[in-house]
Length: 254
Image 1 (cartoon, one colour):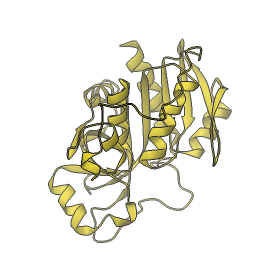
Image 2: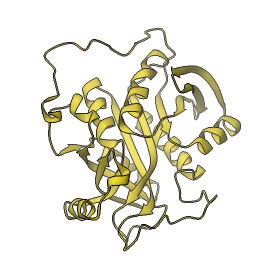
Image 3: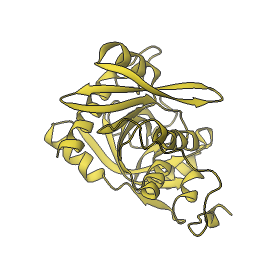
Image 4: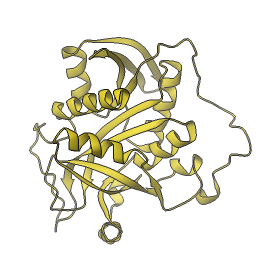
C-alpha cells in the first residue's frame, strides 16, 4: 500500500547526482510557464549555466543576476513526480538550499479573486510522490508559509492563506471530493505542493511557494476565468515572476 511506502531504513538504488563543483547560487526560482521562461531569457540579465536531460528533451538552467545576488531559474514539468525529480536533478547543475516555486492553482473559494496570490499552509497528500519522502499522513505542513506571508504583507501584495489539495488527477476532481476538501479548509487545488514539500524536508532544502488563483471550481460549472490568449492573472503572468524574484531576494537577504 502507498501508505506503507516510506522507508528510511535502507538506501535507494538510484540517487540524484550531486556535483560539488557546480556553481553556487543564492536560490533557485522554478516556473511552470513556457511564456515566462521565454520572457525571462530574453529580458533579464540572464544566461544559461547548465541543462537537465530527459527523454522528452533538454531543460535549460539559467542564472539571473539581480541586486547583487545570483539566482538559478528554469521551467519545470507539471505533476508531482516530474517536478520533484527535476528539482533533485538540479543538484548536478547548481548548489543551493533555497527553492522558490510558483505557478497556477485551481481556486476552491469563489471569494478569492482571479489572479490573486494564494499561499498554501498545509498540503493534502492526494498524490503518490510524497509518500516516498515522508511518513504517511493526510497533510504535510508547508513550513515557510509564514515567511512568504510576511513578504507579501511587507510589500502590500494582496493574498489569501489556506490549505491546498495536491492531487495527481485533475480530471477526477469530482464534486464530492471538492466539497470534502473545501469543508476541510482547502482554498486551492494543485498537483505538486505536497510532494515538493515532502522532498524538500527529506533533502533538507527550504521551499518558498505561492500560487496564482486561476480557474474556479467553486461554481455550478467549471469557470476557466480567462479568455484564450489572455495572460494577465494566469500562470503566464510576467508580474508573478517579478513577485517570485523579489521573494527570492527577500529570503536570501533577511
